[in-house]
Amino acid sequence: MLLFLIGYMGSGKSSLGPALAERLGLPFVDLDKEIETKEGRSIAAIFKEEGEDYFRALEANTLQSFDPHVPMVIATGGGAPCFHNNMDWMLDNGIVFYLSCSPEIIRDRLLETEMNQRPLIRNKSEQELLAFITQHLKEREIFYQKAHFTIDGNANLESLMEDVAK
Image (cartoon, rainbow, N blue to C red; front, side):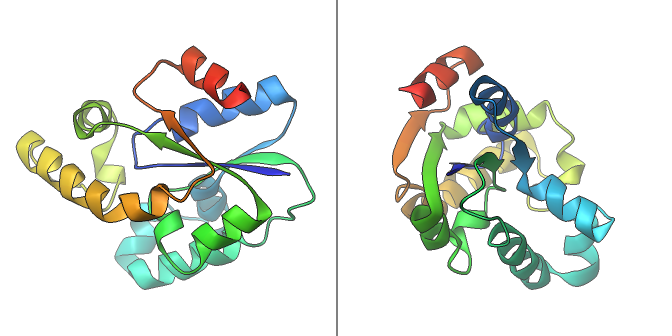
């Protein structure tokens, strides 16, 4: 069975994923890193050189290439559930966990990362970033809320693991 972790960028998918996979004795796949490996370039480079439509098609093809009969934990990119039929495919082929976070927590986490590696938020001020996250999250929530389970992504890693284990 496939276990999918979805949520907005900065929600904790890439932190929770490896820890959860280790606890369950399963392999872990970060979908964005899988795409970068296959393409031999960063997500930012793919967006810049090919555009978002190309990336989203590549993302859907990569996601849907996983065998539902091979158990693993997969952390998707923030937009993956919102394009093509990705969310329906995940719901039909595994268990989907939505890591729900407040826009303020997401902003704070993103400010601590390499924002220039994230095409959608590159070059945004702190104030612009919060406004963007708030609006973008509203648009994506309709997809995220279809998940089988919603988990409070504002919590620490150990609490998140306990929530998923339940």
